[in-house]
Image (cartoon, rainbow, N blue to C red):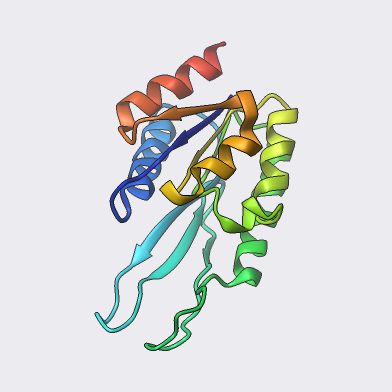
Length: 167
């Protein structure tokens, strides 16, 4: 009940999850979660990262501009926690599936969307997420036997979601 895609190119997993969320919406499937859109800016700066909350029109910026010479993490923890709160509250509507943009370093450390993933799985809601290649080992330790790797192909991921929903 915990599917994940590993994107090998920049933005591959994001684009896959966005496409799957669009296909699910068109099919009338109720969802909770967030998908990521990266906004490219000046080439001297890294992109801006926005999470689009799937249960409404909320868009939450989760990146912060640290300047062109910055080498540190650009994640805005306050933005991420705001998104986590919005997604967590959407569980009360008992969605058919949850899509989360990423199981990243915050989740590996027990923060971010990790508690929401546990809550959704505890309610029997299938969860779909993306994992960066460098985080796959840590994700697999977290997921144990619940994780199923899927190719970053929207049609294949849709088949997985349908199987999880239909039982």
